[in-house]
Image 1: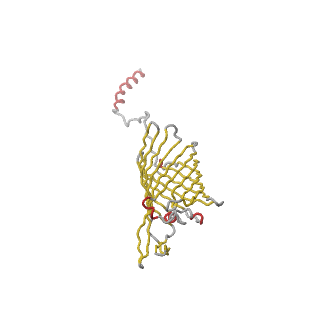
Image 2 (image 1 turned 30 degrees about the horizontal axis):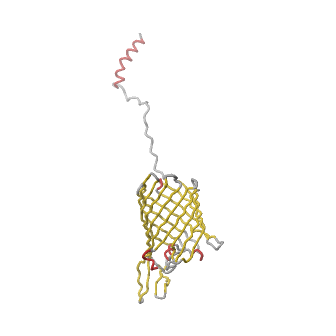
Image 3 (image 1 turned 60 degrees about the vertical axis):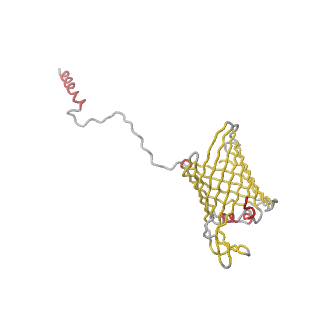
Length: 322
């Protein structure tokens, strides 16, 4: 009888238990719940380290103003580069060094060490913008090294102190696929300037020739480069690649002249254009053979040349990824 009474009492209380009437706080819900994972705090992307070793043989061909060949300037260079790519390819930081050997000499000169930092604020399929920084570290120049300059612009841009270059390089590219291969068309502009750790002094142009003064020159040099290129990858083999690039350079630098005891200053410009034909083949997954042929010409500015000018240049290089 007692068991039946308890069963009837429990049955009588069942509606109250289901409705919550006459009860205190409801018991905790022990059924499994879907818990959303916590988002980790923002951390920089893990860097993707890389390195390369490049052996390069180049030959420059100089011609006189009348078009006669003047001389050839071959050299052998070793380039070593190590760097890291961060933030999904939007940041590229690397350092470069190496060695240079000139003909008719057993001496090997150190290639000027250089640190670089590239930022890509825009990096889409068709449009890219690169904001770059280059720091050439100081080194001791040699007489043989000075002979490699082709103009006063190059000599000033390669001062023996630290040289800092900052520039911006936007470009657009358009890939197009065909039955016989793939083509990539590209066009852009590059604008840059230099800064120095050591003072640069004014060179005054007089009737007796240039005179170097002890007065510091604060005016910057500015360079620009416009280019168009077309690349082709044959469908028969993707190991081959051909590229043709047309470009136009303008270098603006300050010029000081002394006339009637009066110093005048303005900017002079050195312009030249040319094209480059590149052929490359992938020997292995990490080794590539590249040949670059350059043809330089000054166009309407050829009459302003004062001496031999570089007309052709060929560079044969083999690059290995480390």
